[in-house]
Image (cartoon, rainbow, N blue to C red; front, side, top):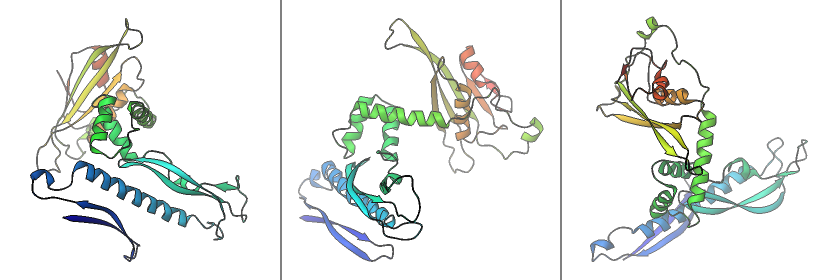
Length: 300
């Protein structure tokens, strides 16, 4: 049988504007492997739809930028260009243009790329998230293999690209991290009893290990890693534990306590909440947990 998939573009008022044939498939039905879409067919379908949706969104955005915001005069076109944009479903060349500024107001430049205000990065945030998520679990090479296996990404995705994107995300997260503090206890103990009933107890396991320096083979550095597990949330029907992990190089990180504090905060930690720390008692890990909690904690 033949299966024809069409792409229908509608305006905001619901009127159909364009109908485009996306792909036509010839499907058999005599064997189990013939049923449904193959991975290759699904990749091609996603890539085709992604391209059409992206270009339509860009065209709509550029149409809104075609007139001066101050006086409404239609802006003159200086030239046409393309912009590359990497997404979960492929890398695409998007049609763009350069416009002259209106003369009704003095500007710093005579022309501008309106698309630059929309495409502030050349990589979609969701693709950055997937690259960073996988790279935090496995090697860069395995990350490339996993993403290219299941997503219609270009063969140009390589280890160097994933490493660069992961580093960029890490640097942004580091820049957003608050300042280090000696103590994160706020308020008076008598006020903690007025706080809402907390979620289940939190258990934090912390340990350290030594890793050989890649360049100076005779030298090592200490890595501190940990896992924070929240037993349950009171607003959920089932008592399902949830965990978050953290890690840092002890001799390099200048905000280790802030890092652990933010992990606890992301789990909804309150000063009246029970918390247990599991560690081997070394100063590097024991000092990390000091002055983070209000109620007495358990140390094991």
